[in-house]
Image 1 (cartoon, rainbow, N blue to C red):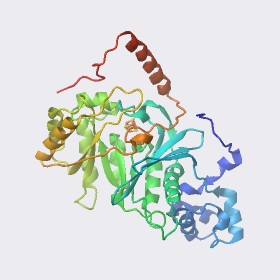
Image 2: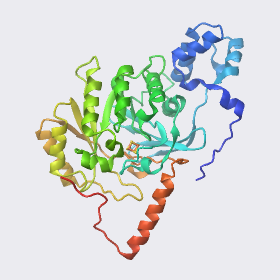
Image 3: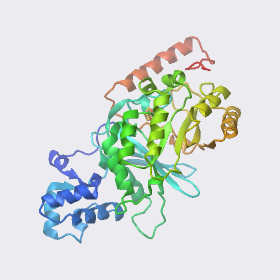
Image 4: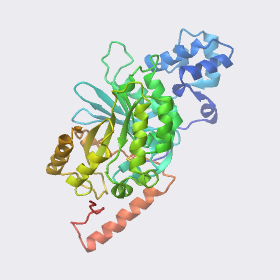
Length: 398
Ligand code: SF4
């Protein structure tokens, strides 16, 4: 599929403010600058995010002349849905084109009592975790607040949620799609505030989760401006192993990361809240008993629950899914140590929508995508000369 934009956008359109990403307060500022009352901002917010109306002409509680003046400054631009695929298990994946032509992916996972939308924050990702398909795509740019909240708008529209009588399909949002949310701090915080705003999507802070791989300075800042739920992506219990799997660990160690997560919790008024610890299990990499014991030790004083994620393979990866025996053993060790442990069921495998598989179509500025493809080609050549079926990408440590 071509990576070029399918629609051309004229410079005058780009110059207009995308009202989609503005808070009630920013919209209020806009109206104030126009010499109007601030409450008009809340009216616009409701039209866009509660009623799904993007055409300013349909916002009938705003006078026609004011709508015309607003249209000179701004418009509502929803990102373009390129495709929408449904899995046999009910998971839905969207490919969404954003300004510049790159595409991001978003996934909806229905469960018995909730429906979770997994939203992207960047085009690609600069952090390059060893086991992640997004990381292999390289990095293009941060998404704007409009492009982040636009994903929630698209899902709400897709499930007819702008009809108040329709059942709520999206009950939870997790910032766990493509990208590291804390590397795009301001836009992510702005978009999450819209998710929480009662005049927009009105989700509870417990139902909006930010997941980070460990950008410690930004995590310190987050606790001062937000109190959404936090997930920390550990994937290894020691610095030695994590340095190989999650390269940002070389900058901010596990101890610093876990301490920062603890401080985030301490800033929350509700002292019963817990952090979710994400741990992707890969066969013979980080799935041994010793790793489970080390993880239990590392998290000793952190109020948390642990979510074990069996690795989901993607084309070109050497990592393998954990065996059921190793998964059960790992879970049981943590259980015995008193931890609440859940195992994430793989969803949307048939449409490559499972955790860690999101790739989109990134116009890569880092050239990592090209280097990765070249490495794969070279390796395929080597494999055809000497097939080494037992090779492992990373040595077991501990
Ligand atoms: S796991 Fe998350 S932080 Fe790591 S490369 Fe993938 S998207 Fe980026």
